[in-house]
Image (cartoon, rainbow, N blue to C red):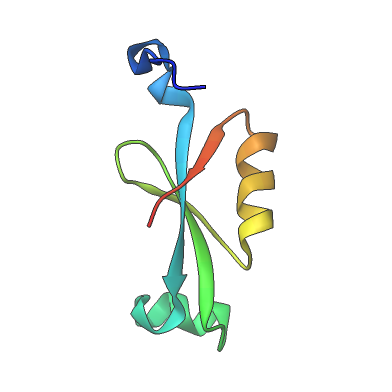
Length: 75
């Protein structure tokens, strides 16, 4: 159960990060497109680039997996 894992073996190019984003924190032009949603979920590359913005966490994970990425949650 408590085995060491060699994280250097991970393919970091395949990892994307999913995090909750408050609608009010988005730029005005993006808020106009997403409406009055209180929370959305962003999918980011390992370099921090926002790849997608979706309505719920389940959709964010499904989208990542459909595109051969390994999604992980980040706070």
